[in-house]
Amino acid sequence: MNHGEAAYGVWSLVFINSAIFILFAFSFFKPATARDWRSFGAFSAFIVALFVEMYGFPLTIYLISGWLQSKFPNLDLLSHDAGHLWSTLLGDKGNPHLSVLHIASYLFLGIGFYLLSAAWNVLYHAQRRHSLATIGPYAWIRHPQYVAFVLILLGFLLQWPTLLTLAMFPVLLVMYGRLAVTEEREMRKQFGAAYDTYARATPRFIPQFRRTRANLTGR
Image 1 (cartoon, helix red, strand yellow):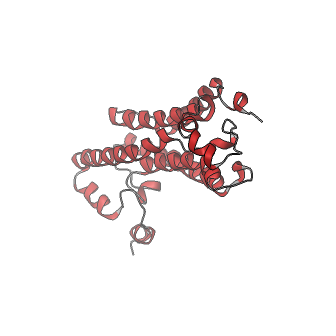
Image 2 (image 1 turned 30 degrees about the vertical axis):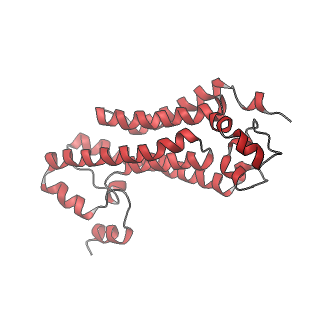
């Protein structure tokens, strides 16, 4: 049974899904500086590459089709379900949309977009007051927006891995890490000792809940 015609070549879905997720992220991130646009542009490139393979042309399936066919001789390579490679490689026979990894991907996406929204709200008001953002997500980590982007990317990788997005992911991690360091240098110039005090008490990317709770309560 061939599902190739229905599963791929649907470029309208590539455009619609890419536009929805990019615009949704844009509505929360609202890039203003060149640095913001670089980070958002890299995120957008990842999203487009993902949906091109999900609904347009399955490049990853095409490149590894020989190995997949020998490993899974009864697999319909052009079916949409086959694109959920984690389920295929793990030998999951059920609906891939109901797999543990797929459900986990929704959790990562939901948390990522929520964090992006919450961080932008805090940062927006801090910028209007020309003050340092230290509440909400910024009370737990110094760069919640970059962490949000990484969580969203991880969610998509759990759902639909491709060779291109897997290769892009570590590059984006390095990029966001460097942007975070650059941003911190600018914050130190702007806020001086206040930022140093904040940075000593707040982890860069990974929250330390016990330590942060103590800082918030003053204990």
